[in-house]
Image (cartoon, rainbow, N blue to C red; front, top):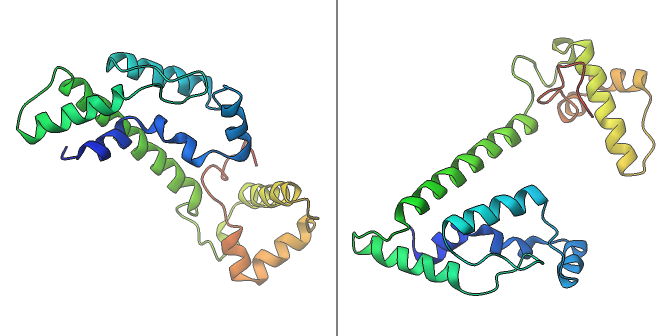
Length: 183
């Protein structure tokens, strides 16, 4: 776990950097003193910060002092000198959990991004009827979101069979082989 203090702080206390990717709505919420993050996330962060004995975030989700930074500097200096702090074990455990969660999230994203295994994304004859229905429903949902008019089902089926590029861009992804898929 070779990290410098800044990298350690970014990984261990990513919640202090969340505001950098805030939407305009989130930024307005923070300006009003409201934390736009989910309650589950806020509780998880609060528990971690309590374990590490650093200050909690403000009601708007901002850091109120440098306690988390100071912890990371102390930890980095100790590790650099092959020593430990009273928090080394807890920090190591938290980092392991953070990395596991990121790995699991990346696996879930990969599953949703790539075509289902066992099908040819350019050949709808390898797709089941359920998959085709779910692909169509997903396209319709996306069109509604974009306020566009969708093609009808029959035209969709013709197009995926006629155009390999259209088929690939609309092919079944994770979960689309199930009847209860929520498009």
